[in-house]
Each structure stands twice: as C-alpha cells, then as structure tokens.
Image (cartoon, rainbow, N blue to C red; front, side):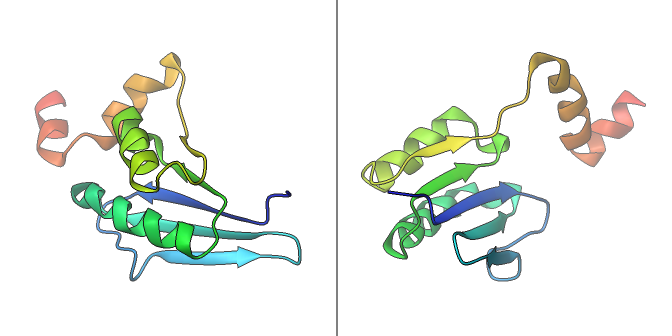
Length: 110
C-alpha cells in the first residue's frame, strides 16, 4: 500500500482547526495540516479519530505534543494508523524553550 493520505497536527498560539486547517495534494497524495492552540491540546483526540475515519494513513504531531500525546492519540485511534512526532535535537531545545516561553516569563529573563 502506498501513502496517499496523511496529516500533520501542530500547535500555534490562537490557532483553531476551524480556521487553521489546510489541505493540499496532487494525484498521488493528499496532505492535511491542522492547527490547534497550545491550550487546547486535548482537541487532538477527536480530530485524530475523524482523520482516521476520513482515510488518513498516518498522523504526525508537532513536537510540542510530546511523547505522552503520541501514546494518547495512538490509543484513541486503536493503533489503526502510525502516529509519530517531529523532534528537535539537544542543540535546539533551549532556543525552542526561549521561543515558546509565555510573554511574562520572557520579561523576567530580559
């Protein structure tokens, strides 16, 4: 079986699946990217279930979800499709933490 339908679910401030879902593709493969606000991570469960119902063969999560959410999503979809995530190496961890820190934390560190 060839990959012909997959999705990426990412976290971004103020994003919602209703307003921040993009689907693109060609004659070989369909790709869907879905944005979720950092404070709404739990929405990934029903979204993932619907994606599987809609024929998605693989789900990739933004690294911000972390390994616990990979397990939660895998379990929620009954391991029907592979669920993985983007990961950053050790050299990128502090810059990512700095970038994603709440604004009030950034002021304290300046």
